[in-house]
Amino acid sequence: MAVEPVPSEGAAPAAPPSEPKMAPWSEQFPKEFREAHKELLLEYRDRTFNDFIGDTTGVFQKVKGGKGIIVPDEKSTPEERTAFHQFMNLPEKAEEYELKADEKLLNKDFLDSQRKYYFEHGYTKKQAQDDIQRLQATVKQGLDARAARVGEAEKNYKANLVQALKGDVRVAEETENLAKKFIRATFSEQTRQDLVDSGKIYDAQYLIDMANAQRRTEPRKRIDESGVPQYEQAPGAAPRGKFGDGKGGGYSTGWNEAFAENAGGKR
Image 1 (cartoon, rainbow, N blue to C red):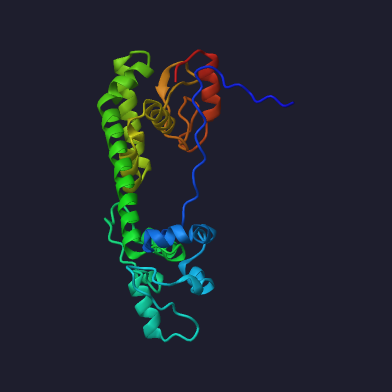
Image 2 (cartoon, helix red, strand yellow):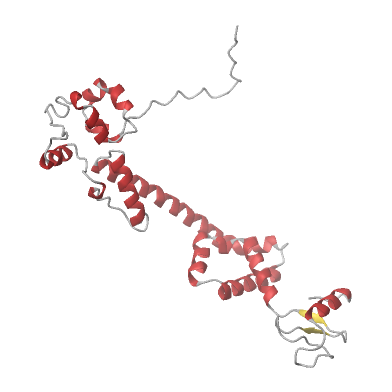
């Protein structure tokens, strides 16, 4: 005989299975109709309203406010179809959803895609607008939370940078200046703004990486063949050394780098 497993002590009870939801357009029918035709409405929960009325015209008898409605069929006139959709508060085409929203939160392309979704799933005009308000509130909540995180990062990034560089304030200041120099010279204005908006510009490791990138573009300290430390010309320029002819001759940059490393020189 199979033995049912005993739940562990303190374990939360299993959540009851959620009841399947009907399609949004079913809410347009009064409670009595929904209860009388619950199984049918559940069967059509993933279908459009037009599918439902096209297949089930026989069930429509006094379904709203005690008044009978005329369900359109293939013989119905355009006026009868329009009257029916107006009565049920359902658009005849997706473009009829107005969907008012703040364009800074939900752009036009998104609203257009939602219109198609609402139409295919049988949302009434009110249901569609209510859902847009819900989505808009969700987006705003996320943006507000991100703004708070960015504000906190901006307030603490200098201290975090010093900590990441083992408490050396001087090195942290140099790193910040080099990072900003590289970002200004390399990235577009829009990209720089995106770095600020996202908070990436306040990330200590990101600043260190950008500072290192800037260091690689600047002239570096070398020991030339005479043993005297000096600054190399910018990458691609003729190497400097007492055997250089000023026209691209003399020791190569690679030779100078190897000499500096072997001689213990600092870059």
